[in-house]
Image 1: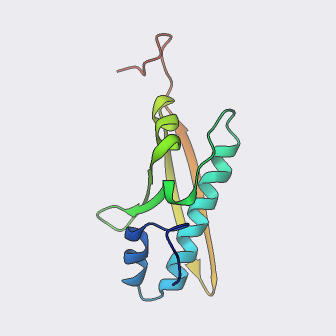
Image 2: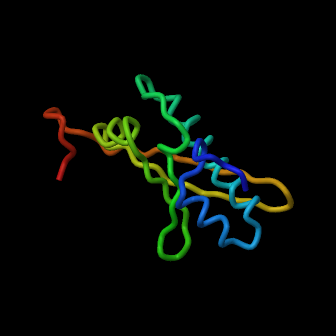
Length: 113
């Protein structure tokens, strides 16, 4: 598990070290980050981002959640975009699916309440 922080955050590395197969867990997180970048790239005007700006955390039941940082976080927040994430790894392979969700905005630039 070698990473200088260019790909994974300290929290992600710590989480993966606690898992039975740390390398498989890292592969799953990398797949999630790549899936997010690919989904985001389909949206016009999306900012470039680095892997550490896309952090994979986990909810109370262990479900993966994306936490965004920096310009990409601001860009998504301004457009009411959120992401749902699924990660799988088994038998030396890992994959992830990211679905971007956009809440409609009113003509004043605010989302409806």
